[in-house]
Image 1 (cartoon, rainbow, N blue to C red):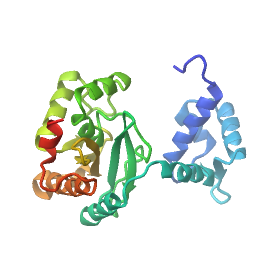
Image 2 (spheres, rainbow, N blue to C red):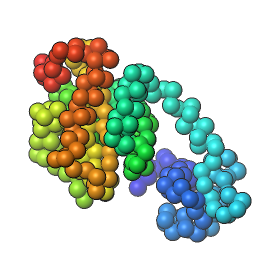
Image 3 (spheres, rainbow, N blue to C red):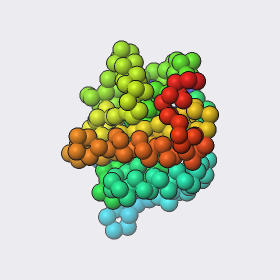
Image 4 (tube, rainbow, N blue to C red):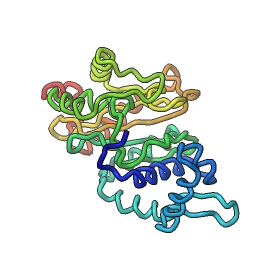
Length: 266
C-alpha cells in the first residue's frame, strides 16, 4: 500500500511505464489495463498524459503504445553519473567476446550495491529488470551476494537493516541461516552463483573486484539461460575469477596478492 503522502495518479503512471518497458513490441491500453489492474478509463487518461508529456508514443502503423525518445534522453543523462574505469569496460567486452553472454559490473558506493555497466552479449538472454543504476534485491543476485560477502560486518549489518532481504522467485532463499552460509561460501571459493534466484530461467556467476587497499570495489558477473549453464564443462566461475583479478589489478590491487586474503585482513 502506498504511503498516505504519495500522489496516487503519479504512482500509477510510473507503474505503467514499468509495464510498457517490459513489452518491446508495444501494447494496447486495454491490455495495459488488464496487466496493471487499473480501470480502463483511468488507464486511458494516464496513457494519454504520458503521451502528451513525451514519455510514451503511439506507433502510427501498429497503433500500439511504446516508450518514447524521452525515456532514452533521461537514461543518457543519468549514465555519466555511473562511471566505470575504461580498462574495466574493455575487460567486460573481452568476457562477452569469449562467452557471448551479457556481462554486468556493479560497485559498492555510498552504502549501496549499484549496477554501473552492462555489456550485451550476442546470444544472451538479457535480464530485463537489471539496468544501469539498479540497486535493489542484492541478497538474491550474484553481483550483490559477491559484494555483500566481502563487506565489513558493520556495513553488512547496516545494509541488511536498510534493505530487508526479500525473494524474487521460488528459488530465492532469504532466511538468515541460508544467507549467512551463502555469503561465507562466496568468500571461501571466491565467486557467487545465482541459480534462477533473481529471474526464472537465468543463471549468473560473479566474482569480486578489489581496489588498491584490498577493500571491495565491486563485482563482475555474467548471465546466461539455465539451459546453457553447466559449470562442470564451461568452467565459467574460474574464468570470471580471472577476469575479476585483472580488473582489480587495474584498480591498483597488487597482481601478486591474493584478493581473498587481502580482503579478509581488513
